Amino acid sequence: MARIDELPDDPVLLKRMLAERDVMIERIKEEAADRLEEQAERIKNEAAEQMEALRLRLEAEKKAEIKAAIEAILRRIYGPKNERFDPTQLLLFGRQVEEAPLDEPSIVEESGQELATRRITKKHKHGRNPLPDHLPRIEIEHDLTDAEKPCPCCGELRVRIGHESYEQLEYHPASFTVLRHLRYKYACRRCEAAAENPQIQIAARPPQPIEKGLPGPGLLAYVAVSKLGDHLPLYRLENIFARQQVEVARSTMCAWLAAAGELVRPLVELMARRVRTSKVVHTDDTRVPIQAPGEGKCRQGRIWTYIGDRDHPYIVYDYTPDRTRAGPTNWLRDYKRFLQADAYGGYDGIFHGEAAIEVACWAHARRKFFEAKETDAKRAAAMLTFVRDLYAVEDDAKSLADDERRAMRQARSVPILAEIKTWLDRERDLVLPRSPMAQAITYALNQWDALKVYVTEGFLNIDNNAAERALKRVAIGRKNWLFAGNDRAGGTAALLYSLIASAERHQLDPQRYLTSLLARLPGLSPSDLPKLLPDAWKRADVDAMSATATATS
Image (cartoon, rainbow, N blue to C red; front, side, top):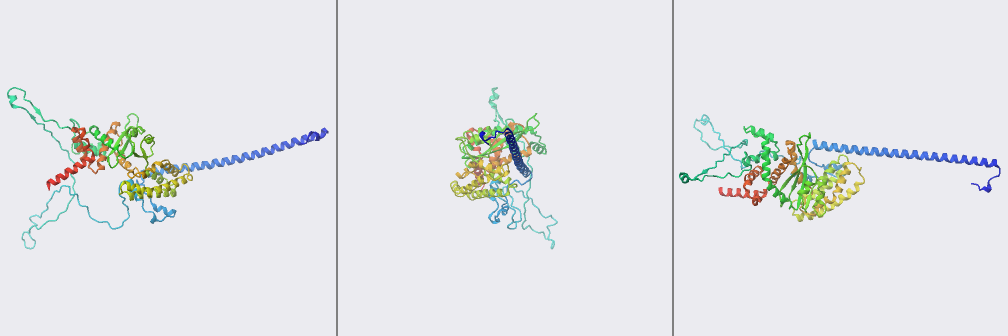
């Protein structure tokens, strides 16, 4: 801009210079406005493109999430119940079949049974297995008729030279028996003759499971085992009894079970106290529909299982009307050892501070990646291979003592865990945030500290499958009897489940065991309760059978 002393004195020139300045200012404003408009349009277009890309990404993630959820539901309803991973899929990623054998350890650990494959290595052996020796034998003789005995050649009567035998298995339906108790009375004839008090005395009534009740211990045990062990609803038992002209209403059987539950409560509480002294407790829960009159639907109660270690070999169930943290917190109050459970937040209070030590479940973590294999097969295959390697160590260490198992885990499992952690940290930043794979990785990382605890002690398990298997009986029963009538019925079921499951853990016949308990508990001193624990009862039963066998030999 010119200085004042450089401006012309002619007004006409001054006016022209001012006009030119104004034109220049307008042109600059228009150019600036055009540039601003172009920038705004460019920013608007870029923002629109980014928003569209974000929308498409979210839409793709949502579709993948919905697809994964639908596939999980369909797989749960219609698919196979196991989570077998076919390692031949690894051929897609450069692995050889010989390097990827069947994932047998994890399958066996989770199912609790030896793996039976479809691979035929040799021909099947034909023929039936021999029938058990302990079953009674009834001999049925088949002889020739008198017309068949003469020799067809010479007419001489043929003599018996031996026999051929075969065995056939027969079944006789269970039957009822009426036990008529005769209580004899005694009186003094001399006192009666002297017109004095004859001192009449009657034999005492033996204690019964239900005082003045109809069922004997065997029938009461049969009803309990049929419903809670064999999953028969009471209306089916009602029909079964009716076939023998015995009418017992299902409401009556409900009352019988409630009375039996109260009778065995002290024994179950003793089992619970011993489980709480275990070095490690396995726990899990499942739902139980409870009738809610007036609400139009059932509400959800919960049954929890608590499994003791091998020194306290009992399986105890507990019922709560809801799934709040109060259930496990109250049951495990003051427990300070290892607690193996899933990632349910209700356990957090138990793990807080100086309380129990959390041990997570590798089967749960593995399941997340198994469910994500449809949307991210490569990463799922990589993680499932890692987990298979961890289970291979467990398979090799199964027969070892605790100290040796811990040493093997430190030598072989710890390096695998380090590889897994590195892989999880790397892949977390590469997957879609809301994808099933991201959820699986997040679950594993959130549980990481608890997932690696099992390698610190030889007596810990890699997973919580024992608790899941213990709850299968509840899930199967739920499909048959559908619901419990009220909270008291749920508590009764938990008490009787505890005895049936603990008996089966010791390979006992729950019918025999419960019959013995219900016959002996009514008159038993509290100090003798330990004799009726499943392990103690089994030892006494084996000793009695051995003594009988020795006496008869």
